[in-house]
Length: 540
Image 1 (tube, one colour):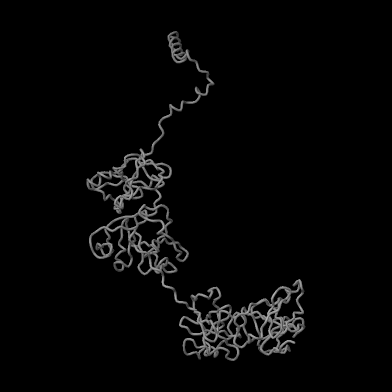
Image 2: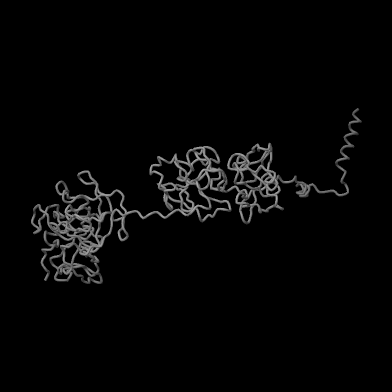
């Protein structure tokens, strides 16, 4: 028995070990060590592929590269291509087991049972078809056929569909929102959710959504990141607007919305809510949204025969400054308000020639709010009876018509020196208000007692001391009516221009840190740097 086993072992060794003796191959030959590439199994071909097309970009094909299509009448979870004629031109695509190329998600594919008993593969809810006239791989001649067939793509953001409009009232509607049976074309998102416009909206203007989005669940804004579109749609017709910090897409200027009660794919029940046509669908026949009507200004710019340009409210009633308002508050309280009612608007819209940034709101000491312009609280005058009246100007030498082009203001306030002491107009200590000139921002202007007429005797040629007493470099335009333009001039100071008043070169005080400060009146001693007003004598 042992001899028989040895004989069989030897025969086997000769059969497998010596069968290629005529062409021996060294064991270290690379071709002997590595499998022949030609011997690899065929690469796996997915049942659905992603192809690059020169016209459409990424398109979906079958395993042989034949283009697949969407039918825009398939708005519901079924196929509307049921007749023999339709299926003859548009054969259905079906694969029992879906494998997909990179860039496609198998979970986006599903199977539906058609009304004719056949099965059909869908992508993102859209049944897939071939086009019978596509003769070869890569053909896309079916796109846009009858404006209802479109090449299947993975990156559509929207779809263009055609279906019966059925309102929330259960009635059928036509495109003109009259009752009737007939299909209408319109835009949906890629999931088949209908998009609507709102008839009262204007171009790029959402007039529906509340600032707190409290009504967004009824008509949610369409927040879509637009990528590719069906070929019937023009990307230039789409845009976006900001709606209280969120981004809404627009079509031909119309902000787009969903209807919160559209519960299923293909629903378009919003077209009858609350009445037909208030929330229309949008399609290629939609006209451009109308331009918004210009918002009425809450502060207007009027031309006055005496004062030139003046500020008024929306009705044309004149507004005023109170020259005691040197700080960021109002000094007109209690009985003063009977003659000088405050002006306040929550939303400031201004005429051309005014800058909304110049307006602000202050909280008054009496708890009310007041609108300011360049820091000056605004008032009406109770004595003005009609549009254009300016009877309040120069009342008590402290009220002035509000203008956008004042360079200076004439104020009245307590002088409080750098030493913290109160001073009167003669620079003795005491409590009492003094008139003086400031720039329009409320910064106090000073003279220097050592100067002579139109001669600056303080500033160094290198301006090394300018930070202490900066020269006033102001381009004079309009001034309050109490001031005489002939009293002002300008001088050259080492190449820079300083304004003068009655021959006095004018300066700021570098330590006046806030609007209304007049600390310079006590530096280095009271009266060396006086304020200037209409009682200031001509400098000799």
